[in-house]
Image (cartoon, rainbow, N blue to C red):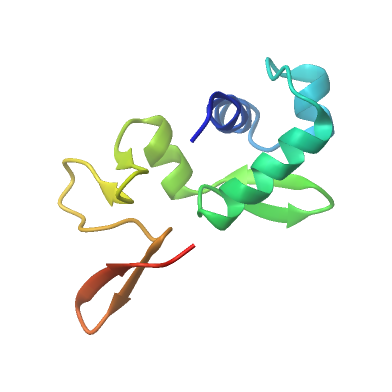
Length: 102
């Protein structure tokens, strides 16, 4: 996770949704549109954002948990709520959890 990632997630939480171009123009995100777009794609792959199409992204429950400090993105585990793992980056099989590669 990077500072740009945090700013993107914060912007989307405050505005309900956002596109890279809109975030660059309106938000406190001082990066290029291509960089914001790349980070949004990565955050989507990690399960913190959902891509609605046409470049518009919204926050997922995992994204909200991360912003609230309830999700450890190094281990993809929820903190202090009894959940064993977040949906992003972790694969559950036969009751066991194992980290996905990539």
